[in-house]
Structure formats: C-alpha cells, structure tokens
Length: 160
Image 1 (tube, rainbow, N blue to C red):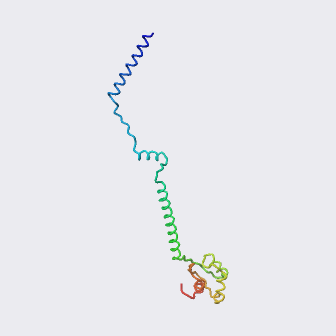
Image 2: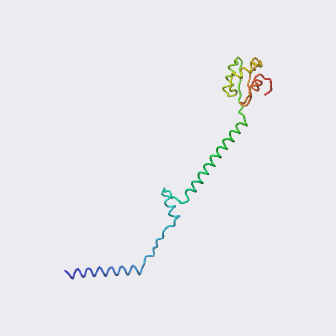
C-alpha cells in the first residue's frame, strides 16, 4: 500500500510540473487593463451614485451665485412686467343704461376698479353739480383716470 501512495503522489507532482511548464511557456494573451479615473467616475455616476470632489465648496459657491443671479433676473423681469403694465393702462368699456341711479353707476365703476372710493367720487359729482348731467351710453375708461376725468367723460364734457 505504501508503494501505491508513493506512485500516486509522484503522478500528482509530475502533472503539476507539466501544467506549470505549459502555463509559463504559453502565457494567456488576455491582459486586464484597469479603467481610468474618469471611466470609473462615469460608471459610478451611471449607477446613481454621486462622486465627491475636493473642490466641491467652490462648485457650491458657483451654484449659489447662479441661483442668486437667477433670482435677481426674475425680480428684474417681474419689475419690468409691472412697469409695462403700469405704462399700458387697461381700458374698460362700461355701459350706462337709462334708469340707472348714481349709486348704480358708482357701483359699476367700483366693480371695474376704475375708482377706489365711491364716497369721494359722489362728493366730487355733487360739489361740481355733475350728477344730473351723466349721459347714457357706452364709455371707454381706464384705471389711471382721475375722478375728474371719469366725471367729465361720463357727462360728455370732453370728447373720448
């Protein structure tokens, strides 16, 4: 039995030498190259991860500056829109029908935001004796007109 074990181990040793010789003589031509840093970062980011970079604080400051600039641009554009709206008053067409009373007419003006204080407007009409000269018809007014201009238009003391 001793001879059998020796022969078996000698066979294993010979097989190892043959396999090793074949490996070292005929090396595999496959070379494994490691990916570049940029490739590794790209692969990690494609998998949904974020790669922290050392100059992250500088990038954060840049992004905050961009956010502030966008906010300022939005504020300036809103102000420009408001200025444009202020420059172009909205014209409102109202119709005064036969049988309407002065409170009805004043309510119509308030609904269309042409006057802010109905008491002041009624007082102006009374003081200048214009309330009885209000004409029926359709009038085009805008919200920048004063009480005097509205009263003159409604009494047709000036041409539209």
